Length: 125
Image (cartoon, rainbow, N blue to C red; front, side):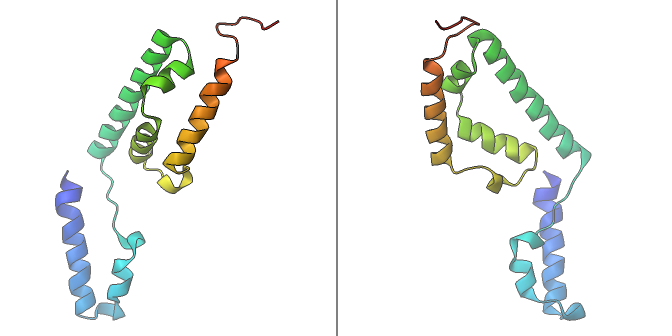
């Protein structure tokens, strides 16, 4: 993508040159901070992300219809990878999610708790 291969390096190299020249007392240390990296938005990239989100939602919805339960869907998808991809496409800070081990532990507990519950609207007696 243009912003990854062209715009970011050009922008960052320009900042390094200006910092080296001492432009307005710029400090190279500020450029080392991860928050100093530029983020470029363009409509093509946003459309690409939205298309991917729509595709994964379509797949998950189809799986839900075929399998009939969320447990079935969780049994065939990699939840951690799905979370990572969706957070990337939604451009969400990944630090808001728990670690992979914690997610896996929760998922196992959730699936075990759901095994004892009735399926398809049946009432337990």
